[in-house]
Length: 107
Image (tube, rainbow, N blue to C red; front, top):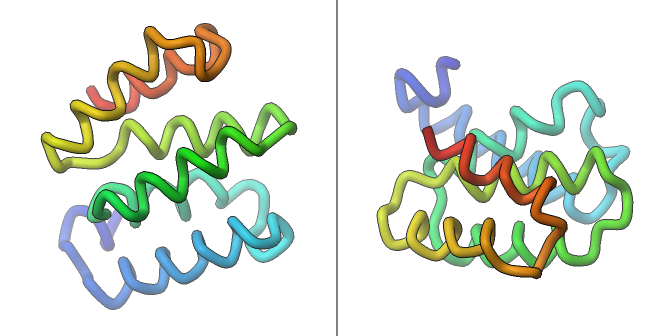
């Protein structure tokens, strides 16, 4: 909350480091914190991070981590990234029931 609402850049940077570590090894972050760790850097993220998270979601076979990744795609604030994220919901890139989380995360 402090990272996002107060835009604490030190905490945002730490969350991004944790998110990148989680992308390499899911054991790097407590499973209960994975969603927060992914959403915080997404909220402040750029297109490169969006593309990395999307690619990771494509490769992910486990439903829960994939849900965290898809949710993070909807947490970006950059309008251009949101315009890239929303069509994913209607595509066949992911199961439509799963990709709806992107739409809900943009709200």
